[in-house]
Length: 331
Image (cartoon, rainbow, N blue to C red; front, side, top):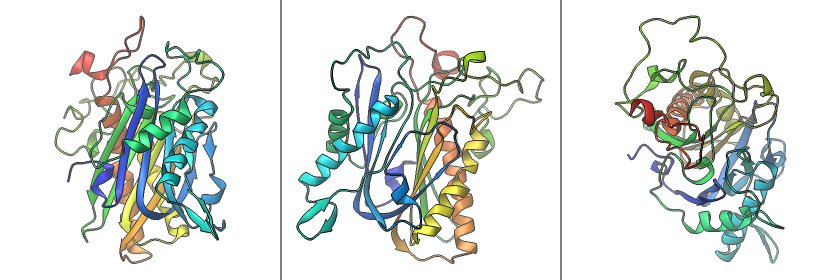
């Protein structure tokens, strides 16, 4: 196990980004169509094809997921991933038509000092195609792909991942793009809210502070009193090898949202677009009640860890006045 989303067999991840733009795309590719659903808790989401992931919608499976910076402009990234899948002959078949199913979600990174004067068309469709081309079993964490331009109130945000398995051997893993309005650390210190769930020293091994002060519990919001601007979002993809129905995938996404609440303070704000995609590659049977509950518990844990790893692994953008990375202070 590599502690990555790609520990789930049949899942590949690729990144593409533009350093000058300070934004990018991450593509999650399924080797076979995956049953999937979604849960949205933030007040300012930016989504593509989210409605088809609801349990009552007809389409059951998806071929990939596109995560992007660029706010609403980044929704073009899914089109690039679709283009690559179409070249592979992948997609929903309706007679001779083949339609790759690629839901997408975006985060706001348009004010991070990168050059957003890209001309008539934003670069995200091409970045989506490049990310899909790059998809493989290994991928970088931190300031890469959709996490390149991500920020939090006090430290550079980024992309993280983590994996685990249930006592019965069912695998579950998460990938998170952390661009939250709330803080991932306790105050401005080295401690992550996610500390109780850390495995080894995957995000520094600092634990929690010996006690909590009033200052530590104050809200640290990106933009301060101007946090009404939707400059935020945490995007999460959870994948398991359990056999799930679409309704069970929806429940898994809902339980996995607990992981955000353990890792970000505060979370699910009006200016966040927090979303969890949950997908099943469908190879291991589980009990529909206890098994799904246990799976959701472990999924929430890996979401918590993935969020902390995203900030822990990030590096600062090379612009004057850019937010420092956690490692700049505590690495």
